[in-house]
Length: 323
Image: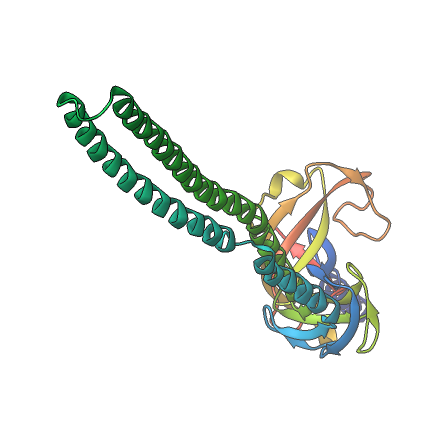
């Protein structure tokens, strides 16, 4: 009888020792969740995502109606084209001034010919006066005529120079006006480039490679900038968040390799490698839902462990850790 009691006691102890696992900490698995929001306002024309779908990095999955931005862009491009029509030309004014210059040049030529004739006439009169064949008054009149022609030629040349200056001034004035008008071209072209960037926001794409967790909107719904469209996460690298006591803090450091255990069927566990990548610098009161080696500790430190997902890990799953 005593042999049976002893055997039953030993079996009970062994069963209890197998059922009680000694882990340093426990926690739940998380993932870096990304909220994909609308970057533009408008009706969703296309949205090809479903919950549980795996998306590639920058994969285009939807489109928001770009009609409003496209119309604004066409309006800006039309305003750029209109700038050419606002520019002026100095050609008509220059043609008028060149006609006046031609007439004035012909006038100078006539006056110069008259001047040469007057000089010859004056010289002939001077010879006659020397032989007493003409009066002194005739010579004075000839000299007076030469002076008049010299003043007329000088005035004509001054007028000719003034006309040339007017042509230069006309060209410069038109150039200044055109520069003022065309100076609007560059900032207006920048508006076009800005709208091209805005049109890129009408495309809905995945910012990371990962799985769609929750879908918030559907095709035909009206999206607004910043409104969530769907939520996704990269499940290839999971995060096990645990809490450690102050006594355990000296045993753990960032970059440390640890053993992570997850429950399998039939009471079995599976071991996975993990890396501690973050330890909170501040202590906090023990959350009600956590389990640590010393559950009676008042203050604990949060820590996060990266665990490569082999397909078994899910968000919210429990995991145990050995340091």
